[in-house]
Amino acid sequence: MKKRIGIIGGGAAGLFAACQLKRLSGGSDIKVTLIEKNPVPGKKLILTGHGRCNITNRKEINKLKEGYHDADKFLYPALKEFGPEDTVRFFENEIGLKVKEEDNNRIFPVCDSAVTVRDRLVSYISGTTEIVCDANVKGIRKTSCFEVETSKGTLSFDNVILSCGGSSFPKTGSTGDSYRFAESLGHSVIPVRGALAPLKADGKDKAFCKSLSGVPVNAGVALYSEGRKTASKEGEILFAEFGLTGPAVMEISREVPKDINGKDVYIELDLVPSMSDEEFDKVLLDLIGQHSDTKITTLLSRFVPQSVASEITARAGAEGLYAQGFTKENRKNVCREIKHLKIVLAEAADLNIAYVTRGGVPLKEVDRKTMESKIVPGLYIIGEALDIDGISGGYNLQACMSEAYLASKNILNTN
Ligand SMILES: Cc1cc2nc3c(=O)[nH]c(=O)nc-3n(C[C@H](O)[C@H](O)[C@H](O)COP(=O)(O)OP(=O)(O)OC[C@H]3O[C@@H](n4cnc5c(N)ncnc54)[C@H](O)[C@@H]3O)c2cc1C
Image (cartoon, rainbow, N blue to C red):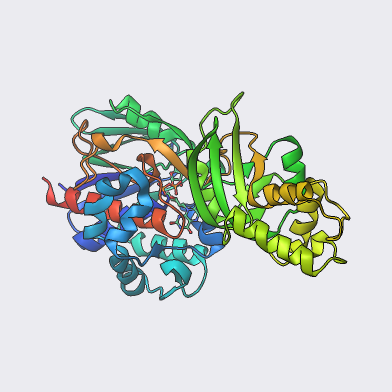
């Protein structure tokens, strides 16, 4: 009798698993069923990379693993067995999509189309995988096999790959069901919160960000919680209607405490990160001396975009002032606002707009060499269901790929 393999959730991880099962088995001796609650698989996948799909990151494995925070050791065997080069080969040779490398080693398909990626994955598996869409899985029970109850009836499997995703961007279908199923089967779940998320500002700081909405700046970004610096990053930020976004902000969002109510939690921006406070003050003082009939805003626009210079000057109480007569106190205030711009946060990283989920099934409950549950033999857990969140740049899809490979290989090798 053919081995019956159920893949629960047709997102990136589930689709990659179906692909690897086909590739590694040649399609024989297994019957693979992929169950997806949406009308079509890959609803989140088609949004990735701003619709272009940043499929992986071509860094050397030892460097790449650093992008997975505390999950680096857990993921190492998976990345080693199926790393970025394997992903590139899979895309080019198996699903016929040539890839290109962009800045920071990010890999995209040449067609720049995440929809094409999803469609090619689906068409690759369509002959070997039964794809059951519009089927909401309601529960999974382990008896002599796995009984998967769906809105279209109950299905039985010898192995289950749990790939229902996390809780981020729930409008795509990832509504935290992985955790519910894992818990019902005996796993524990680390409380989830958003990661790689834009951050909402509070009160007057929100108004400040809104006034600069759409303006990108290279900045030092530091997160402070109850007076302690808990994370920092330098890179591009973008002011937005609601607060702050951009790669540097999103990267540290995972460190914002889950509940910030009543706590002093803020982002401090250094808008001139190439200089220390003292260097900036000295350069500004020199400029003031050389350009006495120039407005301070004009002098500041040598360091930051004009619109930012205007808002910073206003925030420092120096609106309309000229270099001539600019006091030491004025200078101190401008330096504070440009080098230590405080943006108070309104809430923790919002899962509705977070790109990935932090938390989930603890890694100690899963075998890192096979992705098999240590609690439920025959159950494999991959993708965002696990307590893994990578940085941006193709890391999260690569993790799905590597985990899907290990799970598929092990299922095929086990009786
Ligand atoms: C806007 C955006 C852009 C991103 N861009 C990138 C990028 O360019 N590169 C990168 O590496 N990562 C990117 N990511 C992250 C990446 O998309 C995710 O890490 C990845 O999709 C996780 O895959 P997954 O299969 O675990 O979960 P998902 O992709 O969320 O898939 C889970 C699937 O399970 C289904 N499901 C859930 N519950 C049930 C149920 N009860 N019954 C049946 N089906 C169910 C869902 O409908 C969904 O289709 C991005 C994320 C977002 C939100």
